[in-house]
Amino acid sequence: MDLRFTADQRDFRDEVRTWLAENIPAEPLPPMDTPEGFEAHRGWERILFDAGWSVVNWPEAYGGREVGLVEWLLFEEEYYRSGAPGRVNTNGITLLGPTLFAYGTPEQHERFMRPMAAGDEIWAQGWSEPDSGSDLASISTRAIRDGDDFVLNGQKTWCSRGAWADWMFCIVRTDPDSERHRGLSYLLVPADSPGLERRPVGRLDGEPAFAELFFSDCRVPAVNLLGEEGQGWSVAMATTSSERGLNLRAPGRFLAAAGRLADLYRRASAEHDVDPGVLDQVVRAWMAADAYRWQTYATASRLQAGGELGASASMMKVFWSELDVELHATALRLLGSHGELVADAPEAVDAGSWMSGYLFALSGPIYAGTNEIQRNIIAERVLGLPRK
Ligand SMILES: Cc1cc2nc3c(=O)[nH]c(=O)nc-3n(C[C@H](O)[C@H](O)[C@H](O)COP(=O)(O)OP(=O)(O)OC[C@H]3O[C@@H](n4cnc5c(N)ncnc54)[C@H](O)[C@@H]3O)c2cc1C
Image (cartoon, rainbow, N blue to C red; front, side, top):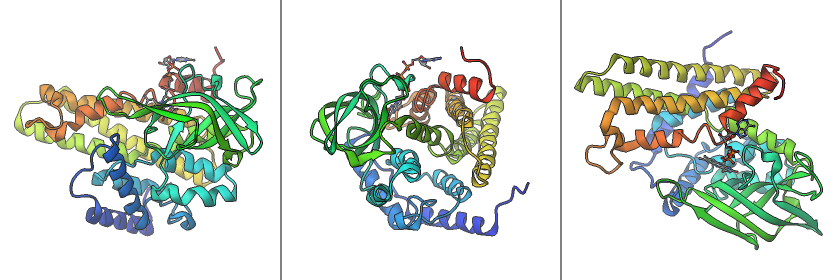
């Protein structure tokens, strides 16, 4: 096994690093879960796209550079290390994008990939329903074929950035007599469809980070079906694999946080005595972030050699989500009472980002399929234990 990067990969990393250093906004953008922040982040997506950095591993025809997975991982490391703005179209480029490449028709590729890469069309995921979260196969939103359209009725919830997104990718029941995984379809729904009402849902901090979607005889053209009618569950599983495994949370995100945590420790220990137990936690968090990095490079090599991610995506999801909580909890232990200061408090450390990061990290074991569900999957499909 050769763990060194090639000369081309090192050059690629240097190019990313230089471009980011010269181009990231001097001032932080407003939070992405506000109307003005959403549009500011959309503008940043356009800058990335114009410079060819929006979707580096996509084909050139859609704005990419056609680099491999290892280069994409290097890009992510540099991106997070630089402190560049969050990606407002993550649901599009990291979840729907790979699914569209795998299941979309050539016409759908032409129609959707470039606007997605450029941030002209920002996507949200419309899967969860009030009575269907973990048990996604129990969804009841119906889409009944009527001529060239499907007619949707039902409700979705917890749709991240759904209040302002331009499009939603939804799982709907197209066979009203079906049960469970059968009779589902994957539908691409324009946010301005007549009969679709979006109601923003406030997060604990008050920002409307989610939306509920209400479909009342909402007509969506049948050409917006992704995959075959009734094949929705298989298509959705391709998306969940991206969501849990490789694409949504690349190691660069946690490496950067671990680096900031080590820096916080240095600053804190220069100012006052720090409990040696906390140093141990800082080191463990840093090592775990590095372990996740190498595990991911191993996975990328396996995928490039024709392997599949499969149920190991669930192990990655449990690992990154618990690591994120631990990283931020350790920072809060270091900060003591200062950790509770909000962003604009004069003595807030790192603009209060450790507390806001901690609160968001707490949702990691819930979104993308809860960790209890991932552990069920690991037990059954990786360890071969009997279903309960
Ligand atoms: C920050 C955030 C963003 C989100 N964004 C989106 C989005 O953009 N689009 C979208 O569609 N959804 C989104 N969700 C919703 C998310 O997918 C669901 O919250 C998640 O799937 C859990 O579903 P639920 O909330 O209905 O909980 P439930 O399914 O009701 O689960 C409640 C509890 O019971 C446990 N449980 C349930 N079944 C089992 C079982 N069989 N074995 C063991 N334990 C079990 C769960 O682990 C959980 O602890 C988001 C959630 C969060 C927190």
